[in-house]
Image 1 (tube, rainbow, N blue to C red):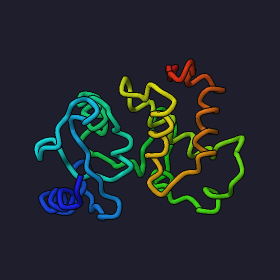
Image 2: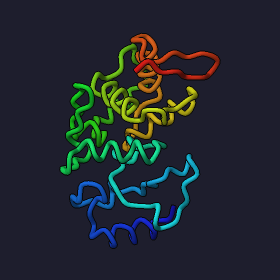
Image 3: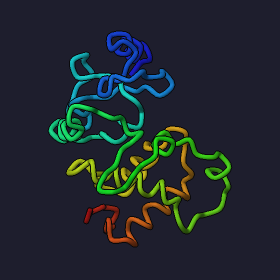
Image 4: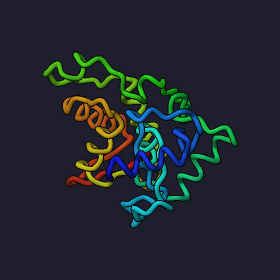
Length: 181
């Protein structure tokens, strides 16, 4: 998608997030397809809105029905992921926006334990996705990476996937992922 489309959407929306109506900095803005492109949704203006990158990552390829459910669960007071609380997992705004120390992301050694907040964010995101969860290890890794727009180390992604498996949240078989969330 071109920057011009994003700029046009932001102008039409008054520079605010489509969902929470809060001011949306261009650096944190992304185009959300209401009917996900992965599910056959088009790039037309009727299907596209501007929202924050964190919310876009959470919505992923959820069905329109599941996206509505997320919005309706806010009971008329939609809050962007900055204060998201999913099944008791409080996810801090700074984590959702992935304002993580670069030293922690690029230290070059494999982590045996992912950061607890990163793991909680991934679990919360997977629970929100319902049936629209990644079905292969490759797409799971990509989905995790997309939750952290400022970057996350490959080792950290691998550690998160390992912890998902060791805690029984997912099972991996021949490159396929099944969920027990």
